[in-house]
Image (tube, rainbow, N blue to C red; front, side, top):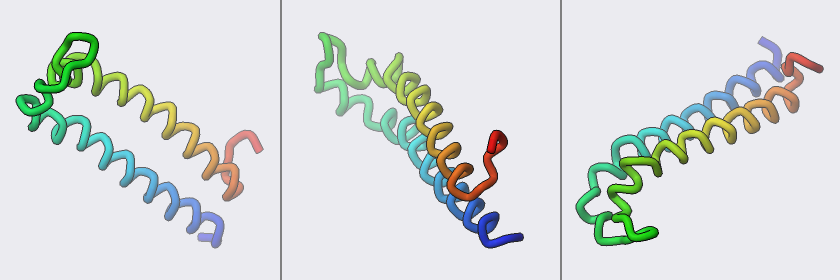
Length: 84
C-alpha cells in the first residue's frame, strides 16, 4: 500500500465509524426514549411519534448525501477518485 492509499483507508474507516454511530443513534437510541420525547411537540405532533414515523428516515437520507460528499472529498484528496 502506498502512503496515500493508507491515508485513504484510514480516513474512510473513520468516516464509516462516524456514520455507523449516527445510524445506531437515530435507529435505536432515539426510539428508546420515545415516551420522554413525546413531551416535546413539533407542529402539533409529539417528537417521539415524529422521529419514529419520518424524522429518522429524513436524517438517513441526509446522512447518505453527506457521506457521498465526504467520501468523494477523501477520494479526491488522496488521489483515488475514479474521474481524476
